Image 1: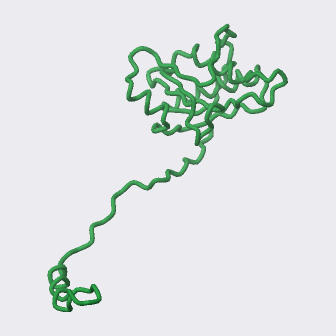
Image 2 (image 1 turned 180 degrees about the vertical axis):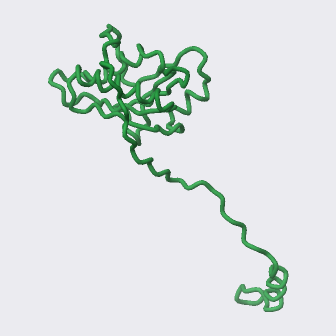
Image 3 (image 1 turned 90 degrees about the vertical axis):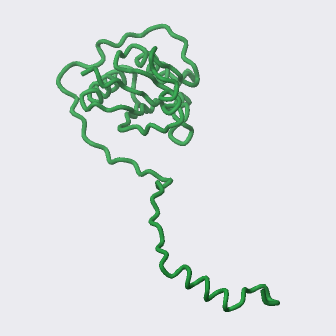
Length: 175
C-alpha cells in the first residue's frame, strides 16, 4: 500500500486483468411498486340484485376478520397483509343502503362470473353519517357473512383504505 491509502498501480492492473472476462449479471429482482391494473367494464346481467341479502342483527367489529372453515392460515394472513392484490374494487361511498345492496350484489355476481380471486370493497369509516355510525360498513359486514362465495374477508391494509375498506377472498367454484 502506498502512503495515501491507494493500492499500487501493479495491483490495480492485476485486478483489471483478472476481471476482464467478467460479465455483469442481469438484475431480476421484483420492483417494489406494483402498478394498479386498469379497470375493466363489468357486465351486471339482467337479474334484480340484492334480493337475497337480508338485514341481520350481528355486532360489527371495527376491524374485519372472517374466514370459513378450511381456509389455510397462510392464505388468510396473506389476505390481511395485502399480499393478494385485489383484482377489482367497489366504492360504496355516498350510496344509500338500498342502492348499496344492489351494487354489492351486482359486483359480487360479476366478480364470480369473471372468476376473480380477491376484490376490495370500499365502504368508508362512517364519519359522514348522521348517527356517527358506520352504516355501510355494518351492512357490508352483514352481506359478506351471507354470501356463500365469500371464503374470507379482512380489513384492508392501512395503505389501501384501512378500516374503511375490506379485502374479500372469493371462491371460484360458485358461478
